[in-house]
Image 1 (cartoon, protein in one colour):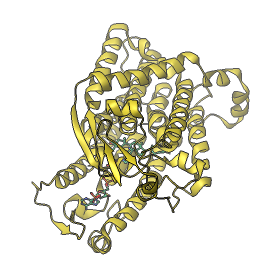
Image 2: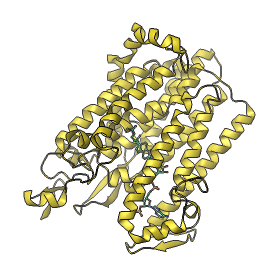
Image 3: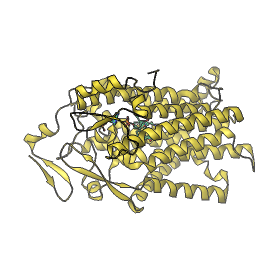
Image 4: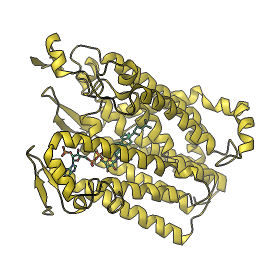
Length: 448
Ligand SMILES: NC(=O)C1=CN([C@@H]2O[C@H](COP(=O)(O)OP(=O)(O)OC[C@H]3O[C@@H](n4cnc5c(N)ncnc54)[C@H](OP(=O)(O)O)[C@@H]3O)[C@@H](O)[C@H]2O)C=CC1
Ligand SMILES: CC(C)=CCC[C@@H](C)[C@H]1CC=C2C3=C(CC[C@@]21C)[C@@]1(C)CC[C@H](O)C(C)(C)[C@@H]1CC3
């Protein structure tokens, strides 16, 4: 029997029921333990490589091949990798995000019902946190000039290291805590293989008595606040660096303004729609381990800001024709992304103002088969990919490195679509095949 501990809302599970509630995972994803090791090593490595391969510290983007070995041997590069000031600034940033979560008022929203029959409540104040932060940053830059906000640009590598250390600390801590009595494990994170479970996330919603009392959820917190908002600050810091280099009273380039506006809009959109992530697979199904920790805290803010970083030292102007093209591409992508996500969320919320057609399923829920959801099974990914391409194109066609993001994103979303397909096949059975026969395209109509 599973009985709820009323005080802390933590399930207390008898030993004999542990196996029923937390069955052993039988299937590996991401290539199993070998894949887990590979991603755990290559993710931090890629972060360093991207920034050393696209930096004026190493001589450009990409740096001349001949200069790489001499640069790597140089003391300056090694020095830039670790800096205690940057480490404390990063820890201060994380603590500031926690304080904002605690102090800024916000509605409490219920998540989905979990396997143990319980529902968690989440505080919604990520958007307010971002507005407060942007206000403070704008005030600082207005008062003291762009030079006052180039710390992030100047300490990029050291901040990457700090965020990786934070991810490691969190991943080891939550793995250790997942062995406490009553922890609800992720169905895919309980294989018994230490490395794999640590990587994929053993516990569904890592916590402890203290965090439970405050109703603080580490997984949703990390997914939306310290990483996403820092990504925006990274872009702004790169813009400040560009302005400093261009001299007093100089405007940023059109390309730099565009990347800041596009990515800023994307982040604010995610935070404004904070409650919608509560139904996404990362929150409902996946555990929280090193993969999500490093993805949220290090990968998103530091690799997604690569275009702005490049533009800080390679100050290309796009010119009107390309500006209009890139702006249109991003706007159409955003329209598809937002309309598709809103249509699905509204429909799942029990409303259908657009009279979208749907397929009834034995599971009880209906699947939309008209509008954007009638064109492909992941129209929101399609819009997201168009935006991703527009972001890369803000850097013009001078270097392939700034196009890394679209390559990574195609792989991430294709893999995600495959994982979702597998989960929906289990959820909907035969109805899923019927649905796939009606909506044939996976992401982009007539292409994939
Ligand atoms: N920038 C980034 O790095 C990333 C961005 N994203 C973005 O996050 C957003 C959400 O993505 P994600 O959660 O992966 O996927 P989806 O928003 O596509 O959600 C998939 C779920 O939606 C439901 N669903 C599927 N088809 C239909 C339908 N026809 N009608 C109604 N419901 C349907 C199913 O759940 P059920 O039926 O149980 O409700 C399915 O499991 C996307 O816009 C994506 O682009 C995602 C990952 C990374
Ligand atoms: C390299 C590596 C280990 C990757 C792990 C994957 C993560 C980078 C992504 C997994 C799901 C994500 C989501 C977003 C960012 C990327 C990660 C963390 C997201 C917060 C971006 C903004 C969107 O609007 C979103 C809120 C829907 C989205 C949620 C999923």
